Amino acid sequence: MAEKTRYSDEELQEFKELILQKLEKANHDYELLKANLQGSDGNDTSDTSPTFKVLEEGATTLNKEEAGRLAQRQMKFIQHLQAALIRIENKTYGICRETGKLIPKERLRAVPHATLGIDAKLEEKKR
Image (tube, rainbow, N blue to C red; front, side, top):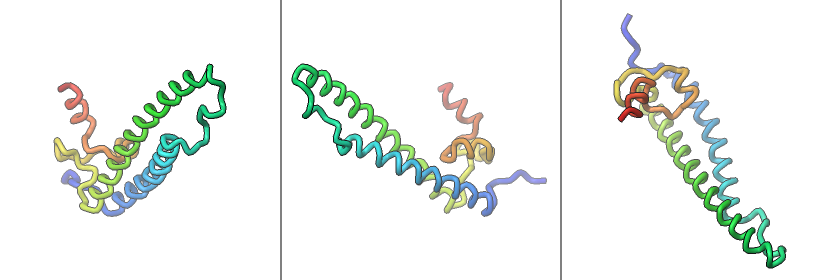
């Protein structure tokens, strides 16, 4: 029996549904991070005494920097998921970009935006 070179349309549909679920959650999380960055939660230092104001403003700045990093990371994740949807439409989803072999379903279920099989990923980390 010949080795499969791509996933069937039914399998691609299964992955598409999984990715759409993850994309919905990722977008929701991104919006929460964005709201935190914009300070729309109403927690600021305007109602604190001057003694603690400097400390709280420093903590607020650190929190916003961390939220900014998290938001950037979340946006990158969203972009990877969107790229995976495009690969599904092109019927190239699940094919390792290094080896050209199918990425195992278990890996794609765990990391649906993966573009490398395990062997290729491990080899990449060695470089």
